[in-house]
Length: 149
Image 1 (tube, rainbow, N blue to C red):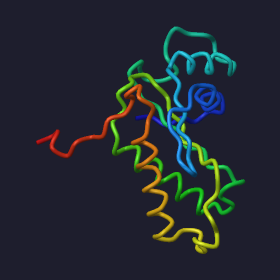
Image 2: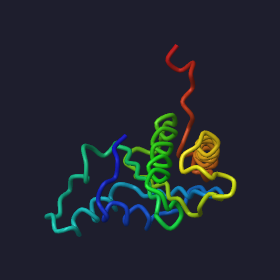
Image 3: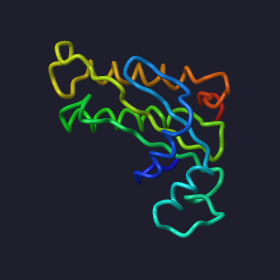
Image 4: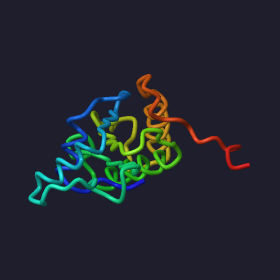
């Protein structure tokens, strides 16, 4: 799994469909051909090659705006949780790009500290629900611990 890095990559994915949402997060998905167009629009010459290592590559990006998480330490902790939880799921759609976007802030009265264990637990539980509630297109499947045995 590769990470989205450029603004045009994020914009291409956000132009795609919303496949799941929770109270604080939204999961967007778009297929790789749109990623090629986004790379072509950024001044690079158009190419038939995907904007990355291969057509079966899964891309992931995390958007955590300052509007919803004021402190940098909180934004970084949320991004770490997004990438950590996403590494535990298997994406069944090859060549798709995904963006997890924070759409509302966590109550600072409940989570006084910028990074606390209760906040991390809350974020992780919500991200697990997010990845588990994908639209019926069947784009995600959980990795089974017995699959390797």
